[in-house]
Amino acid sequence: MDMNISVFYFLAFLLCGMFIECDSWPVSNYNFVVREAPFRRLCKAKKILTVNGEFPGPTLYVHRGDTIYVNIYNQGKDNITIHWHGVKQPRNPWSDGPEYITQCPIQPGKVQVQKVIFSTEEGTLWWHAHSDWSRATVHGAIVVYPKLGTSYPFAQPYQEVPIILGEWWKTDVRKVLKEALLKGGNPRTSDAFTINGQPGDLYNCSKRGTFKLNVEHDRTYLLRVVNAAMNHILFIAISRHNLTAVGADGSYIKPFTKEYMVIGPGQALDCLLHANQELGRYYMAASAYSTGVHVEFDKTTTTAILQYSGSYPKNVAPLLPYLPSFTNTTAAFDVLGQFRSLASQDHPIFPPTNYLRTKLLFVISINAFPCLNNLCQGPNGTKLAASMNNISFAYPNVDLLQAYYYKTSEALLGESIPSNPTVVYNYTADYQDLSSELTRKGTSVKFLEYNSDVEIVFQGTSLVAGMDHPMHLHGYSFYVVGWGFGNFDTEKDPPAYNLVDPPLLNTVVVPKDGWTAVRFRADNPGVWFLHCHIERHQTWGMDTALIVMDGNQDEAKMLPPPPYMPPC
Image 1: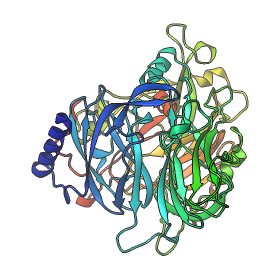
Image 2: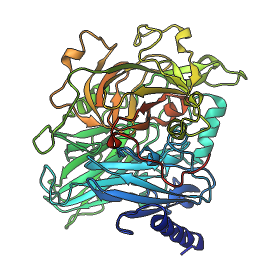
Image 3: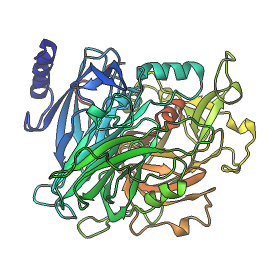
Image 4: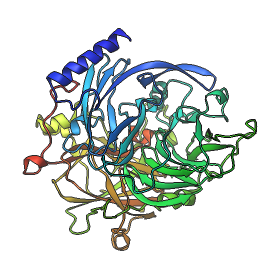
C-alpha cells in the first residue's frame, strides 16, 4: 500500500477516535483517496481525477436512517469537495459539500472527515465532486436499502446493478472549462457518453471494454440508474425489453412501464428489468435529449450489452433499441410526467396543502454579458451567462455557511434574491428583446423561516437559447405538484396541482419554455444550494442559496460545526 495512503488511514482512524464519535468503525466508514489515475478511452490515454483509482468511483451501501463517516484525502493537484447528492443531512449542512457554499475546498494534501446522515431516503442516490468540473470523473452511486426488517414495495429482485451514465472528453476536462470561460461561449461538447465508465461498441477502440450485464432467463433485475453526465439529459433503453420505473431520487413511485426512460443530469432512477426474451445479446443504449436551438450537443450513442446465460450463437451482433429523436419533447415528458408517489400506508407523503408562508417565482434563463475584449463567442459577440430572477450567481471567496453561522458579516451573505422577477415579460415568446438577455452578477441568497411551507415555481424562458433545466435543491426533497408549457398562470395553474400523489424528488427537469412548481416544508436548518444540474448553466450562474433559519427548540437548530473544516 502507498505510504501516503497508509498514513491517511492512520490519521483518519485518529480523527474518528479523538475528535468525533464514529459509529461502528470500520463498518460504517469509507475511505476516499482523491488522486489521478491513467485511463484509456477512444484510442487515447490520459490521466483523470478519481476516487481510489476507480471510474466510476466506489458505490456506497447503507440502510435507511444510517450515519456513515467518509474520510476524504486529497492527493490531487487541485482543490476538491464531495457532495452527497440527495442525502438530506438533517441539521448537518457542514458535510453537504458544495465549495464556498457550505465549506471551503479540501486543498491538495489535506484530509477531511465528513459525517453523512441518512434519514428518510430509500432507493438510489449518488455522490460527486462539487468543485469546478471535477465531477466529470469523480462520482459514484449510493444504494440506500430499506431499514432492516422491512422490504421493498415490490418483489425482491434477483440482482441489483448500478448503471451510471457519464460523459467523456478526449482532452482534460479542466482544459474544457478553462477554454469555455476564456472564450465566453459554449464549452466544447463531449466526445462520448459512457455506461459504467465505458463508451461501448459504437466508438473507436472501445469494444473490448464495453460493459456487459449478464442475466438469467426469467429473472428480474433492479437497475439503479444514475445520470452523472455533465451537460445532457439522456434517453436510455434496452432492445426488446421494457423497463418498469419503481423509484426516483431515493423515493418510491407508482410503477409504470415504458420501452425507454429519460433521466436528467443529477437524477437517479430505479428500474425493474424482466429478462424474458429469447436467449441472446441485446444492446442497452443511451443518447441525448436536447432542445436548445443552435446549441451544440453530443449526438453519439453509448452502449452496453445485456447477454443471457445459456447456449446460443455468440457471434451475432446485438440489436439496438429504439431511442426517441434528440429533440422529442413529447417522448421525454411522456416519461417524466408519469412520476407519482406511492402515497401508501407504508410510504405516506406530506405535501404542503394549506397556508403557504413563502411563494417564490424564480425565472431561470440563459443570458449574456457584454464582452470586454471583443473576442467572446456568445451570441452577437457577448459572453454567455445564466441567472435566476436576473441575478447571475457569483461564488464568494468565503464559505457562506460559516459566514452565516458565525455572523461574521452580513455583507458576506450577498443580496436577497427577489421572490418574484423584477421585470415581467412574455418569458416564452418566440422573439425577445435583446436587452432582456443582459443580466448582472451577484451572490444571491433567500432566507426562509424554519418550518414554513414553501412553494417555488421555476419559470423557463426563451432568452438566448431556451432549453430544459434540471433544477436540484440540496438538503431537501420536494414535491413536484405541477408543470406545464408556456408561462405559469397564477390563477389557472394552481387549481390543477397534484396534491394527492406528487412525486418526491431532489432534481426536477423544468421543460423548455415551460414551468414546474415544487413544494416543501423548510424543516432542515442550514445553508442549501439550489442550482441547475447542467454543469455549464451552473458555472454561468443559474444558482442561489436558500438559508433556512433555526427554529426555537434545540432539535430545530443546526448542529454545531465539526472540529475541523478546511480553511479558505
